Length: 130
Length: 138
Figure 1 (cartoon, one colour):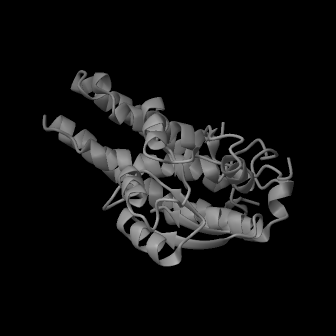
Figure 2 (tube, chains in turn cyan, green):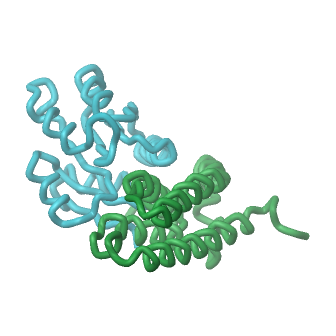
C-alpha cells in the first residue's frame, strides 16, 4: 500500500516511516505541510493518507476538507494521526470525512495494525499511548 | 496481536533500551538520535518559557502560541519514542496554555507555575540524558 504521510515533525515522520515500511511493507511518500499534502495526493494517488492536524500553511482539518472536495482525491481514505485529542476535535475530524483517528503519542510497533483495523472498519479511534 | 509493543518492556528508567527494541537496529538508532535531539528541544523550550516569564514580569501579554506549538511537538514525539513522563509533562503545560483560568490568573501564580514546571522538565531531561551510555560515569 502506498501511504502519504503528512506530518511536519521530522522525528515523527522518521519513526512512522520506518515502522510502516519495515513492519507493514508499505511504501511511504512524505509531505510536511497541508499544501504539499494536497499536491502529493493528486500526484502520487496514495491508497491512504495519514494526516497530522497541527501543520503549517494549511492545517489537517482544512487539508482534509480540500481533499474531500477534489474529485481526484475524495475517495482516498484519510486517517488523522494527531495529538489533538479533545472529543469535539475528533468528532470534527470524522465529520469532514476522515475514516479514523490515531492519537499521538502512538506505539510505532502497533501503527500498522491500527491502520489495518481502521481500513477494515473494525475500529476507528485509537487513544494516545498511556 | 501480531505486533509487539515498542514500549511494553521499556526498562524502569526512561530511555532504557528494551529487548524488543534491540531487535530493530534502525529503530534503536532513531531513538538514540531523538534522545540526542532533546538537548536542542530543551534549549528552545527554556528560551520560550523564560521569554513568557519575562513578558509577565513586564506586565505584557505573553506569546503563548509559540510555547504551545513547541510543547505540542515534544508531547507527541517524546511519548512516541517511549519517554512517557516527559510527554505527559509537556502535554500538561500545553493544555494550560489553552486554559483561560490558568493564563489569566494572578501573574505571580502563573510565573511560579512556569518556574516549577521548568524545574521538573529540566530534571526529566537530565535523567534521560544520564541514561545515554556514553554519558554514564564509569
